[in-house]
Every structure is written in structure tokens, then in C-alpha cells.
Length: 149
Image (cartoon, rainbow, N blue to C red; front, side, top):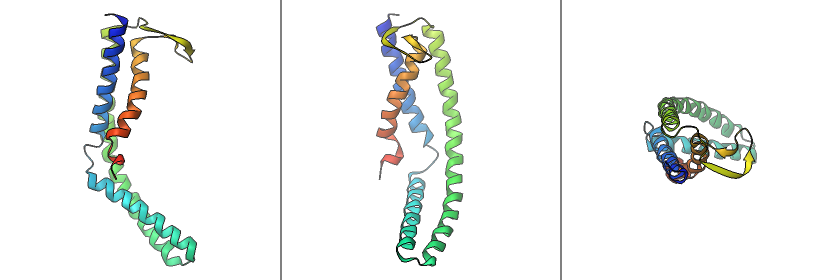
């Protein structure tokens, strides 16, 4: 396969994997759960602000009670997210193996400057890593549930 075609195919694989991971990671957590978590965090900030303005300890006590609820709730959400992340890690690992076996480790592009630990010639695997970081940032901003308010 020609280097330009390999660059494009590997970049498209990175986009596809990032969309899959972002969608799958939040699959097990309902949108209402994430909204409730954000609402609790906002209520705690508001109670702490009222305490700092007035000095009334009832606001601080309420904030501490809500923080306990928030911690329990966060643990439940994080448990679900962690399971999904392990599954997507397995998918990502399979993609790394597929890229190496399909495209090999021959350089596919020459950078105008060397990168630390990589050098100035990129193999398909390193191109995938760089493309994943770039497209992952964009994908997470566009389609992750935290973006929706």
C-alpha cells in the first residue's frame, strides 16, 4: 500500500475508534444520571458560597451531607464507566495489533522535525497514536455527554 493511502486509512481508523470509544464509554450511564451528578456538584458549590458569605454553619452542614451523597453517587457512575473503558481498551489493543500486522512497521511519512522517542519517520502505529490524540480531542468535545447542558 502506498504511504499516502496508509496515512489516510490509519487516520480514518483512528477517527472510527475514537467515535466508538466515546459513544461506548457513556453507554451504560444514562444521561439523567450524569445530569443529577452535575446538579449535585452545583448545589454543593452554591451552599459553600452561601456559607462563605453568611458564615451560617447550616449551609456548611448541608454541603457536607450532599458531598457524602455525591461521593456515593460518583462511585456508582465511575464503576460503570470503568467497565466500559476496559472493554474499549481491549478494542483499542486489537486495533494496534491489526495496524501492525496489516501495515507493518515501515515508515510511511517523514516529519520536518524529530519527535522525542519517535524520531522523524513515522510508522503506521505512531501515526495512529498521533491521529488518535488529535481526533480524540475533537471527538470528545463534539459527542461526549458532558458537552450537552
